[in-house]
Length: 159
Image (cartoon, rainbow, N blue to C red):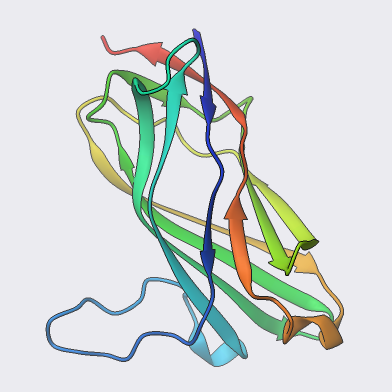
């Protein structure tokens, strides 16, 4: 096992993108009918080998994120992405989860840890994550961004 690290990435949130013939529908939220939601996109999030500034071990790309008010004081954060196993190593998410924070300005209103499935060498696999967070109803309208926080990780050499 090799230790890795990530840089923080964030996206601003806005309304769901409209349907068009030239673009696939938004992948999150899974059920738009559950309540009000906001949507954002991050192009890529990579884990780099310790000791390197630019050697990606593995990562995620085409990341879509949403927050949705599904009931009183409950907000669902969802993530859809494509795991990028075409880098230098296999990603291991069992012990080092990706940390997802829901923010209003600089204030963290809630966070979730995603223990992602292994990112397999030579694969570009879709992945989905959802977690329900306890956030006061009055704060939902203030949520303006989601951050994939800086975190440590682990990888294994491709076999």
